[in-house]
Length: 241
Image (cartoon, rainbow, N blue to C red; front, side, top):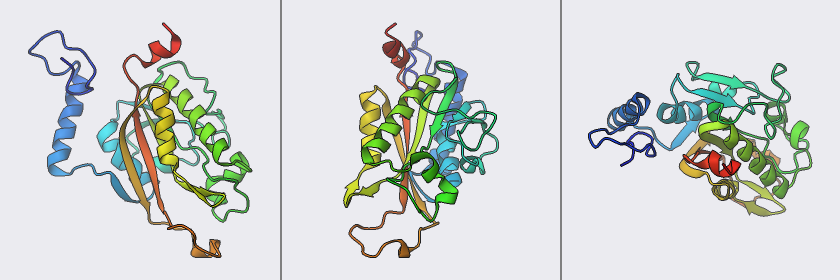
């Protein structure tokens, strides 16, 4: 019989429902949310609104969280109670870490959050001052971005004990719609991770229409955040132990 909280912990006593108090509290929180103010997958607003909704269901102030693409910390503006350690090559001088090669030990954080540069071949992009894509991924094509994500997810999964949260957005490259949020799940599952949940951000801030001369695809202001579970035996399987 498995724990009702984490769905993984084996219970040796038939009268037990949870493997720890933490799992019991998480289950209580989920049941209260479900009846009074349910967590919904669709969030309208900005990244901090999205993270606030995700954290309501999947994080507490007791969790250690590593944001390995911290930027200016926009994700966490509405969740100051969370214990977040930020690192970024460009914006966190005390922790200028490449998210593909982190100095953290295995399973050193409960949750690792990851939102890498995702624009395909960015150049004179009108919002680059906000995203710094030209400084980090200039000239990258679809395959390059997908590899960047996969390398980051693999390293995040090494560092995380429980979950990896991955932010992404679908793109158009060479006139072809690239379904990044699907590709990311496929790559994560190939590594042995499990897709637990998918949140969709309907952004209120929009890029002006003047960016395009013609329209070949429906505009897609939404972005996505995958909640990926680390299976109980993941680190053992990866290490070969």
